[in-house]
Image (cartoon, rainbow, N blue to C red; front, side, top):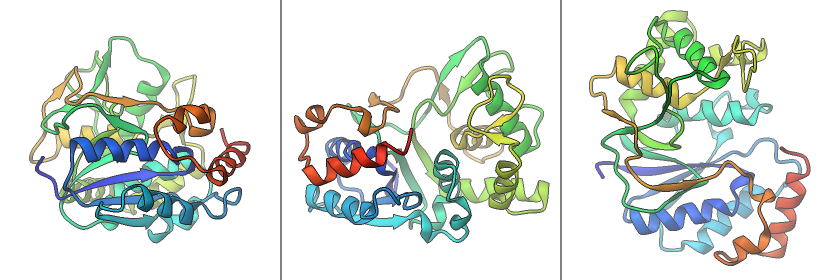
Length: 279
């Protein structure tokens, strides 16, 4: 792979899943330095989470070249104490302000690769009929990019470009995206998102399909497809096989993890306690 680094974003719900993810990276993408960006907000029900996370990963992978970051390292993130789904997407639009290098494989920490990783195409799923999420994503992309073509391929096919939670990102891609949006609205991309979020014009879900639904990957890939100097081909099949589940670790049986990973009593109790207060 032609990348400089691998970047994982994680939060308490992936405490054990992130180890499975890193094992798969060790198997299929060994040799790259790794940055792990930890969501350190909203952890009052697991106060030792950041330290626990860093120590657990380091103990499991002592040979890996890992650099840890925290969401709070990013200026302005203190305004995002609520809305984990929003915060965890927005931080990816500013990845270049966390990590070094110019080309990265970005991976959500609940991904487990099952074969060598290819980044020469954009993997996606496609539907002929819209659903509230794909419609909301189009409204979001249309607004952010100021385009009357907030889709790829054609208007009548609903490509979900966020269905594969890993992708190639470049420094100039993210910088170009932010510059494009900021030139349209005369304000920072970050501030624009905060404004839309706080006025309920940007939401996690709208069954009526009337409101923008954020998808950082949809925004990035439509921008890459329409405006970036080096677009990637889009395919109906995945360029790499992987396992992925949005189920949080506290909703998974402990014994299932114990068959694969070291699971301490302290970590499991902390995870269970955290899960009581989060969906």
